[in-house]
Length: 322
Image (cartoon, rainbow, N blue to C red; front, side, top):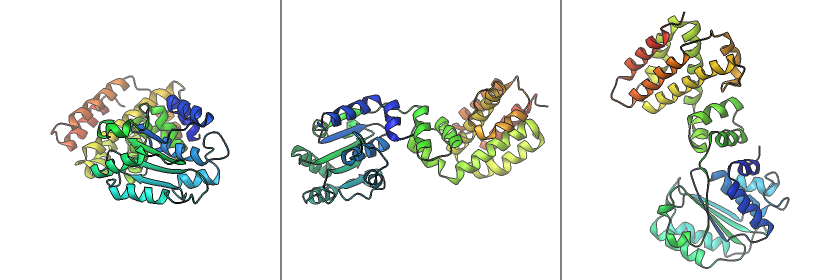
């Protein structure tokens, strides 16, 4: 699914503003997007300024691809998350865009996470915005509007993006060619696309996902292996990492829920492992098991010993499993 379709579905206000402004040819010289999920929207906006194939970006033409790859001569991207935005960055943009367009069209600069700018950089940007140049467009993003100068805000068209839903995270992950099953799993574990996507690239994600499936198989089919496998593959590696342990336990809950989904002919989150869940016996204590795991997640944030917590959890979960 293209970004255009995702935005139309998950960010209707932004999509409506863009469509109307491009239709009327009354684009603002500066936009300020607010939210934790502005990355793809900002790139789509930049593409829309230069795409000649459609009212908004087609996302397929050479120009659209070059914007996405940050390989378009009249497009400058600076990310405040990678380093603080400095006065020299703003001066560089001004200098580059004072020259004739290399591409023969609009010139766009994208400043991501503008709140991570020095005070002098903010003031330089303000002066640049106060004297807009024809054909030059600014796209700014922020996670914290309170850290952006009110005078900068007043010179931008501000668009507050809606918080990311699990559906929108899953759609964006799938759009970025994340495997369908992984897109569903990750969207259930994280509240932002960026966090989900970044974790999905890690070896830890692949290892934890494997161990979750092994945990469920051991619990119901090979319970004698459960404790030793937890100690070898999970506790030994992650006993000092509370966040990773909570991700692991939350993923187990997703798997237990999938037992219910499969037994009732619903689509499981772990859709590529449906055959595993079909093998498992019906568990009338499923809700009790989920509650036990949730309680363990709660206790992880205390000073309890994680190895002992996992052992205790496993003993409780194995009760009643034949």
